[in-house]
Structures are given as structure tokens and as C-alpha cells.
Length: 311
Image (cartoon, rainbow, N blue to C red; front, side, top):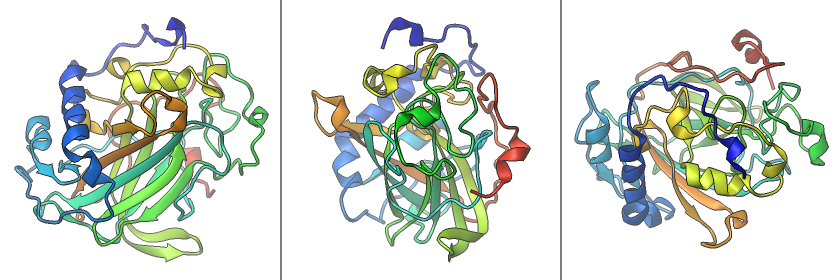
């Protein structure tokens, strides 16, 4: 990727240093990565803080065998591209091209010693390699990109790169997807919701309540190494780095920065494994409004009210 991907025109909403969060996330790669992708997850970890005043520091030092047990105290916006009715499935790619990403998330109860939350439904959605979301394929991702229909895939343009997984007894879910591309004015990210109290019905997840709405983020050096590759490289323009993003607040893992490990050290096209532990309050209910901007592309974008239609 060339230097024109850096967006220098966006002012950060929060004056927090990204370096500390990135270092904290990097430390997890050595201490907790292997156990994060093991078949079982320890349930004996304890939280150093379970109150509403939990800070990035306490979150980053509350270790579990799968990474960091963190109380994600403030939900962020679900953005303008949410659709109800996503399918319960592990592989959400539907043939969309991109660098493979195996995503493993562990849901724990941050109000009860970071014990697993079995049965929690984790829902994720994100854009494709060129910045397009299913259900909104005419929305301009900014910069210069081919039309979404030119990617040659047979993906359903209302459902690709969206899905639920139900947490196992250890609170773990796993998705097979691709690393997202980017769109103006946002950095590389994945949206997520954590639901409890509902059940699988008609291929999707019905009922219950949303406990947390958040976003997952990628270190700049990883995102940029991916964006050099096909098909990402066909989308040119101003890519927003983490420090300039309107949603990411510089808190490292406690703000959703993924721990990532390449499948092949010298070839990013082979894919990555990503992990994060999500500390939630199963009794809380979140509306999805959250904080931070939605990051709407410059034209053809849906309004938040129009994004409630069924997929």
C-alpha cells in the first residue's frame, strides 16, 4: 500500500496515546495466545476490578489463561450497517475474497470473577476487502474502488460477512472470516454484539437482550501489510490509522484491539488468528447507540433508521 492510505485530515475525538494499548495487546501474544486457541479455557481467573470505575490499567493486568479479562465499560456505536436476522454459522465468508481470519472470542462475566458465559450469542459483521457491507452494497466506501459486484464472488449481497456463534461451556466462540478492508473515514474494524437470554430459531438468534455493543480493531502494521495484497490493493485512497479513528480510544485490548498471530510469519496472505476476551455484564442491556461516530462513507450511505431491516 502506498502512503496515500494515511488519512491526515481527521482529528481524534479523544487525546489518548495509542502506544500503551498496543504494547499491552502485544504482551498477550506471548503470554496467552496459545491458550486462547486451545480447546478449553480456564474458568478460575479472577478480575482485579469489576466496578464501573474499571480502567484500562486494571483491565490490562487482570489476566486469564485466554488473554485479559476486561470490563468493557462503555459500548460504542453499532454504526449505520447493522442488520437483524444474521445467520448462526461459523464461516461467514460466503466466498468473499480476502486474507483469512480465524477469530476466537471468549465471553466472560466481568461482574463475577471472569467466569465464562456459556450460551452467550456473539454476533459480528464487517465490510469486505473493498469496504462494502452486505445489505448496503451501493454505499460508496470512499477513495477509488471497483463496484462490489465486480469481485466475482457468489456471495448473497444481503448476508455475507455477518453471523452469530453461540458460546460453548467455556464461553468461547470461533468464526472463520476475512480481514476487513476499510472505508472512509474509519480504520480497519469488526462490529460485534453480545446477546444473552435468547435462543437459536429459524437459523438465526431470537429474543433475549444485547449486553454489549463494540468493535474489534487491528494494529496498523498488520492492516497495512494486508492492504498491499489483492484484492485489497484495488481500493485506493485515504486509509484511517488507529490514532485518527473516531471510535477507537487508544485503550489497547480493553478497547477491542485484537491479539493477532500470522499463520505464516513471512506471508500475510496465508491469514491470521485473532483472539480477545470480552468481559461483559450479563444483566446489563445495551441499546447499540454507544459513543463515537458511525463512520458513514461519503455518499450512498444508509441512515441508522434504515439499517433495522431484516437480512
